Image (tube, rainbow, N blue to C red; front, side, top):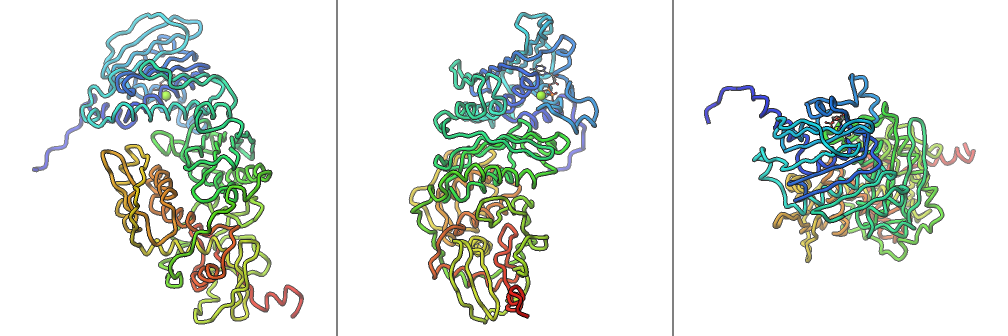
Length: 583
Ligand code: ADP
Ligand code: MG
């Protein structure tokens, strides 16, 4: 095709394109309208959908409303009452602040807004494809009613890609629940095709969660915990370990009342439960974090799904310790008693360190909080090169002291169900069994591997974006022996890697989870798979398994696990002698 001259798009076309970035499907309208109602301090919000939201989305609230002058401005690009200067961006407490939602919706639908302040006269504007078609007095109670009809009617490219109304409704409902959870004092109602799909009266946080997920979360098994520190406060609604789930859907994080996909915090909660739930089981834990607006940045993701914190490591530590404290009353082994030990397959001695793990994978310090302290209290982040708390005189695993692989070692046994004790050439080693096995599996994954076909493929519940991510990552997955396939618009897990002991169900839930974080997909996949498949702390190992693990890590030059923690620590004879005062 011959090059065409550059032209500047006319405003209406440019507007439609920009609008499509903010509003990509009906659920985005539901999200934005709900946020506006909540910013207007509504005590009651009703959402009505027709055709999964594509035909009609109506949101009615009893919030503080708008007067006529504001109503005539609210749908203009960059019109907002929530900030005035860029400095205000640092202190935002409202859910919205960009002034883009209503103007975007106005550009690509037929929009009708009726509003009245508590002591004012109701007024109404109607806008079609960005043009005002009606403006005048109206009738109605105080508050605001927004109706969005025929979304994308003038954006043919977008219309073509809309999914079935049933699946759009599902996404709208989860957006609705995400908002409703963080505002338990307000009443929410969701209707679709005139039928009530959810009714959430004012309640406590725990009650709100169980009425939002009625068939899944037993209210009696939820407990509210409080945590706090400098610049933040948190309330955690924590499930009992005896009521676990098979996926991470009930592990949710809200920051300043916005649902966010902050993996480090999800991991903090999972970590606290690690001794209670093994093998593909996940806790119910909802974190509601309030952070000083100055310490957090929501401006990272267009839908504010991602967030950056200044004090993440401290928050992480507090959450782990509050949850661990709460969990102490439960029987640690209850959920895992009788579970078979995942075997250590293949000769791990063949594994070669492919690269410098410490350099390639550096999680935020908080993630490295997988401290070895048996009581589950948070310990300081460990990673080579950091100032880490270590037993006095113990050397660090990344020293090159035991590079000579020809020396035989003597395995002396397992202590504390966690450390493997080894003697070699006048040195004593304590090998962290979980970290060591994790590293072995990680290396094995890096070397690729074949797959093992599943007799019954597992359905992967992913949305459209998730499907795109799976499609993009197919090669990465295939290298590990993982095959996913799309059939009639749904995705299935078809083969699992034969080189690592991971359950198909566990892998499936891991994949569903990872598609939400496409940027880190590969790294997270490797790290989580190795963590998930490795023997846990607290597991008794057979001598054979222990020896295989030791063989696999003793000769590594930089023996750290995928989280950056040392795999073993060591003392020389001289160091031990000096500890007992023998010089
Ligand atoms: P933002 O929420 O980022 O300010 P919007 O385009 O969503 O931008 O809304 C523009 C403005 O319209 C808001 O700042 C607010 O003043 C007003 N507004 C929108 N919805 C409502 C509502 N339900 N109740 C009261 N005011 C509203
Ligand atoms: Mg808004």
